Length: 187
Image (tube, rainbow, N blue to C red; front, side, top):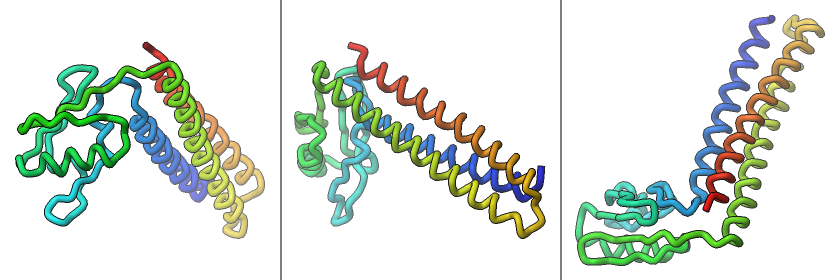
């Protein structure tokens, strides 16, 4: 196979891997009823005038499957952190005992599980679309190699390889979504 096509394939594989990583990260943010410190990744607090991720001003632990404990490094941040959690609309009520903030993770209702499963499907579809867009870009780049002396057969072979890559990465997205959906639907 032509070196130029090989480079395009490597680039496409790298981009598809990033799309998988992004999809996995997006799926991780969907809570499955179990406490996970990443549930608070989207929360930013005002730290001396700068919007700072919560994880950079406090320790976040999971003492058990149904609760999170947020322990600020500076006691004067307790109120700010508590307000940021309430304002974030993640559906958790912080309990401030003067030293730490406890967050009880309520069990998911059947209806909420279905909604979350729907969100998993939406995120998975975004991942598949990202992979398909990368396929399109790779195929366009391969077609543009014709003036560089790449033959029609090599271009067809390159496109076939891109399709194989695409199929493999879409299967990976589907497996991630399937695992997350199973996790959500498990009571």
